[in-house]
Image 1 (cartoon, one colour):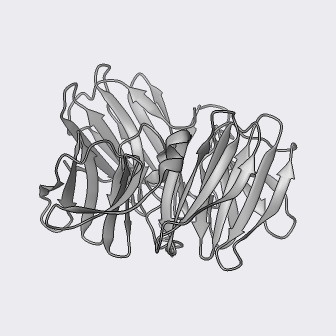
Image 2: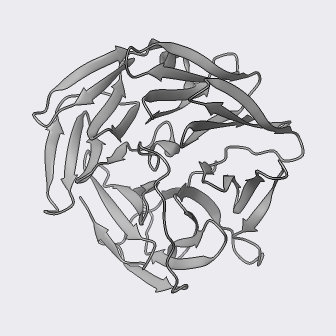
Length: 338
């Protein structure tokens, strides 16, 4: 499983974090989508967080809360929402998917149904995002086939834009006017592009030469990137081939496992007796930081997301309470947000 789940007790909630900068150069990051794609990539069963213009929206129990960047304060945003399949931010408003419908949330704590999306109730391992006026949802059907659905935000019209029989995973990653789709099984990997202008899907790569189990997936202006264990693979738009770009474990002395992509960065980690070790590179393989989080062995902590500067670790305190630690992977500094 490519998402890193850490089962250990944090020695202190304010975990000891040591950051070491390995590279003094900075990168020019580019926002490649008009919807948040940094948290929904973590999929089913993980904390729902959305980055807005002024802070973070997140789920706790059945309620949606808001963390303000400037004040550092947390306030109740929408109470008793219920279960949430997706929480995102689009066109200056937070959106949530729950009970087979899409809702837009307001500052007064109210919610308004946009349209019903009953089709996702039949999907497992779902991923949902909003991009360029569309809601895109993907997942696996009961018969094992992969399906990607597109909904118009104007009227809720639904259309299947991609299917693959006997799939073990399916991922989407929008970039500009293309929704990139990655699906496959132990025999084949298929990479497709759905054009939001022409509304057509084209196959970019389909081969058994390079297969994945449950990859993270991210696209940039230059390439499509996928993960397997501690390795990053890249799709070359010129040659049409997928090959290893770099491997966190190239020295064969550690056992890093990739935990996700965020814009032009990729992070990986491993656990030993001294704690959890986070290693961040830029997407080209250049070192950024190494950060160590001291752990013990009773409380569950989960890498739950990332944005353009930080990796987020959700800590379950063994009750209904939880805490979120943000580790800045540009300089190694951290803070407990809530």
